[in-house]
Amino acid sequence: MRQPAKFADLILDAPALRGAREDTVRGMLTAAKRTIESVTREYEQKLEEATRQVSTGKLWRVWASDQRPKGKRQIAREPVGFIYINGSTRSRGAIDFLTKEGRVASKTPGGYLAIPLPAAGTRGRRRDLTPGEWERLTGQKLVYIYRGGNRPALLVAKGTTNQRSGGYRAITRKRTKADERRGYVRGEQMIPIFVLVAPYAFRGRFSIENVLRGSGQRLGVVFEQEAKREMDARDRQSSRRG
Image 1 (cartoon, rainbow, N blue to C red):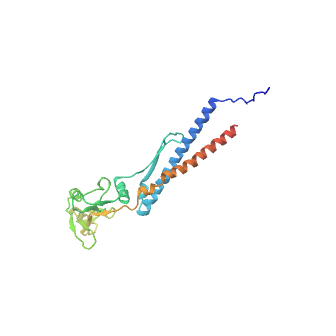
Image 2 (tube, helix red, strand yellow):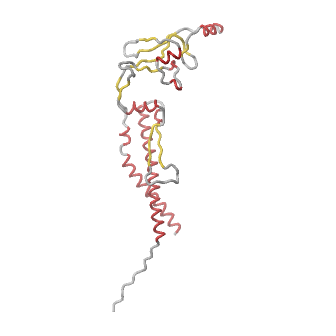
């Protein structure tokens, strides 16, 4: 009589299976978080470089990035990264100027845009000083100077400038007497306070959308690398325990 085939007993360790599943899920979530951190920073640097190529100074440094969750040991099913402009209204306006299309114009239809020069003393809260505000603050009258050609017109005031700050100073009787005691003659000049810019259209120098294009594909590539790295690390830990 034929004997029934013998099969090895199959023992399922439910707690171990649950633990392995949880380890795998945690590994994938950790890989996803690292992917978001890496790619977000990578594209922040791309925006910095694009800004650096079309501007002067340190405007490129206004770009910043962050991600959630933040803690090294914290993970989430949907980690997110974001890139933003970490700067003042002027910084955001400068980035808009470089990346969008628009028109620079005065708030008054058909008027000129008055840009304060160093002599206007625009510091702190006075950075957006207007000609009218400057006249009220100083008690001095601005004079319009047309220069012809392609040169912009100016608003000037009679006076002098501070040697240290370059800011405007009116020549008063008290100041003149103090100068005379020091044997110094302060000559009155026409000091440029504002430059007047006619309305003009501008076009962006680079496109944020173009810089970020391909980021989705890049996420997939980096996630695959991070997931393999995470699984390899867990396999090595398992082999050591075994």
